[in-house]
Length: 390
Image 1 (spheres, rainbow, N blue to C red):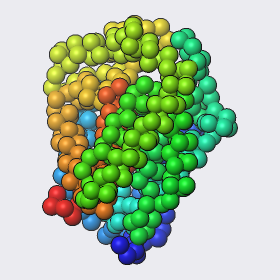
Image 2: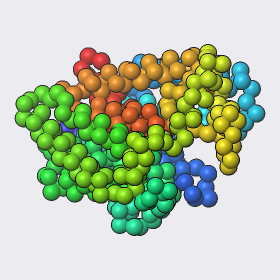
Image 3: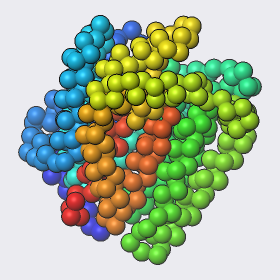
Image 4: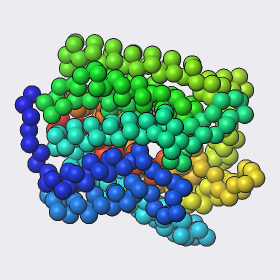
């Protein structure tokens, strides 16, 4: 396939690449209250104003649906009269930004050369972030009562780090050049192994499950028999590397054993039943954003907490904005899944669907609704499905 020149202005392209590369490098323990990906995301949004035709040319179903969710977010907050207005406002602004990033990112990544370069940049950024952790540079460790340690870097949440790196591993596995041909194995596989080791080091059971689910999608349908065979061998090899690393990681091995033997899921076994009761009490508009987390902790009464996260995207939506906010959000989500599925026979291949499966599996045990990686994956899925009757 001959290389094509990007139609998006250079400043917008490079701002997108910079934003994509910033996602693995959150630094939560800084003195500034705004995360690096949030700041770089603002830079990208400002850059899109220089090429409005490329960035804002299309308004499709997911954007309308997610905008509807934002509207119900505001309504739920006003109806419930939150006493935590600063936190609710901050949360709303974060959600507004990620929806704008979804809109502009999907439109810009519709340009195939831009999409390929962005994913290549993301894969290398994840490999660099993994190297910081694996080689002990800016690594943080947490001892486990089951034995072993959980590792991350730059003070990041280990579970979210595992999801970001998992998406980076899938991007590395499908790494291509501008002509659409895969990069040599000597380039791709060191990245895949390095990131896999870092994912296992996080000790995130949800991250391990999410990555495994994403890898299994590579066994799915491709345009040719050779492509299916190639993807299958790559996916099974990567699963083998992942399993080998998990077995030889004391922290991951012990956490998996604890979950299997005692059913301990880091408090989720108490959180989920409490959330179901909250949903039954206020099904339509929920308890309001942020207030649902405060109410959850009031019921759990666990020392040292003011609020508790729902640890599940669906339960977060239902308790914060009720059915009224969950329906439009899930309409947008379903459309992105449809787009990613239809993109399997396009030049994008199975990667958009694999990354989306990884993120959706991850949100079964974590919320991550305002995380940049979730909305990057959604935007990529939406962009990949365009031009195939979607």
